[in-house]
Image 1 (cartoon, rainbow, N blue to C red):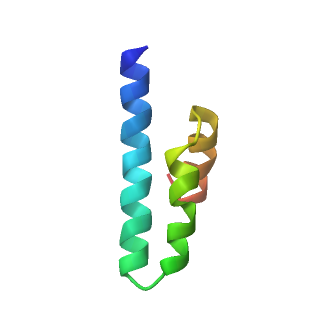
Image 2: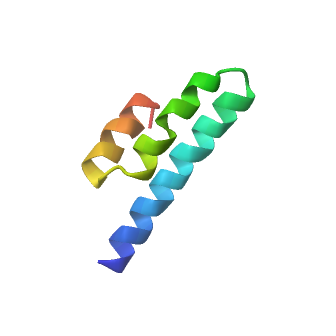
Amino acid sequence: MEENKRALEERKKRLLTDIYAGAVAGMPEMLLEEEEIRTASEEEIDALEKRHGY
């Protein structure tokens, strides 16, 4: 259980890094996804990763 939670947090961290990089690169609208990522369930993270090309 703890390992799954840790893996989910790592996936969220990777997505957050992507949106921060996008914002710095001139796409500030990517920051609109920040709260969505932080509060997402595992299933929602799956969908977000697909949307981001993972």
